[in-house]
Image 1 (spheres, helix red, strand yellow):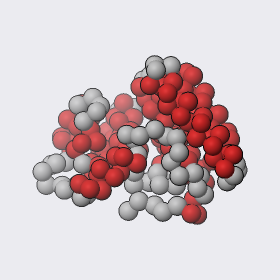
Image 2: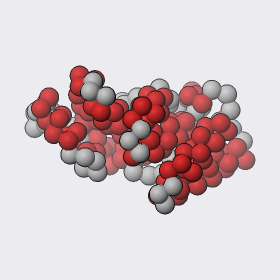
Image 3: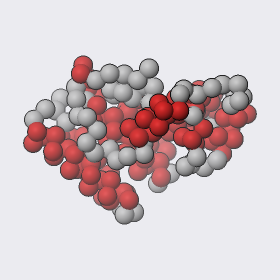
Image 4: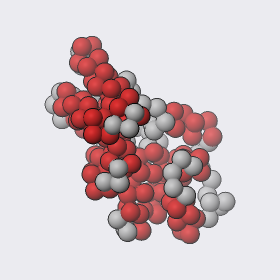
Length: 176
């Protein structure tokens, strides 16, 4: 990918992040969609698409447009570094929960807990963690190492979508 194209995608995502933070979700959504359209070829081959779909999905999630949010996170999990990403699994679990598909919700929320620990649940409605506690014993299941949890949270969900390593899928590594 050329530097010009990378810069264009990064700028669109940064603008989207700023608009989302300023309470302008529709304008943010338009920037994220524009960034997806700039990606050459099939978006799902680019790691940047993972973060763009996550950002777009978060806009829909916070607007309680759960159907569109689900489509975004479903796409994100199929992009490079999407599968195994605790934040993506958290959102998928929350969205399955909202769709009353409780078996899939429990599965995805467990994946989020295993990869991100209990901290990943702390910024959202406590009903999701309460639900998970009815399905598994959090004391008996140990999440991955704390340093990895911090790294994953920094990479995936607690920073902006912009500038997150725009690369082809063949160049990226998947999370364990």
